[in-house]
Image 1 (cartoon, rainbow, N blue to C red):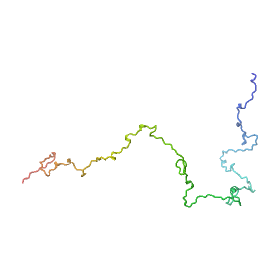
Image 2: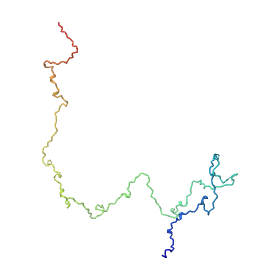
Image 3: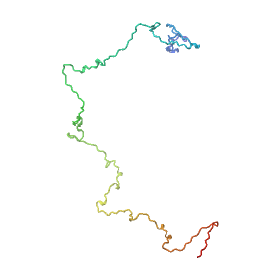
Length: 252
């Protein structure tokens, strides 16, 4: 029980206070909250706009009106002033190359002998007159295999494919039937028998116009060359209100 009152060191990890970013130095701008250790410049404030309408027509410039420092109350200062201008452009167009533009290592020393140098120029534009093939147009024969033209070759063997006829895996059930063979016609090697053909039905030549049948004629109506019995016909019914003319018999 006597060890409970022992003072233990406080660990920094157990502190729950704000970190270093929590604190900030006081400002040096303005007069509110200014850093007391720094010198504070005098500050001024702008008054508010007056409510009287007679003061609203003030045409004087505001605080942003810029006055040149060379201008005094007696006019512009007469002291000479100078300015630094940019470098003027060289009127000459020619630009001298720098030392890095030269390649002295490619120039042979003067007065010393050196081997002749040749270069391969491009093909000229003259029309082609030389049809000689180039070296890569030729091809030497192959030395592999049995068809070597001017060299002696050893024996060459090839592996044939598996035959489907007579092999152990031949399927005898697929033997062709009698209709598979093309038999030769008997007329080729024996005397040919007479041959007949059946032609289509033929018609006698005649007129193809359409003629009337027997029923198209009415012989009972013809009486020009035969005697006929008297014929009578029934008259029509007359109305009793129709006036019938009277015919008087005239005697000679």
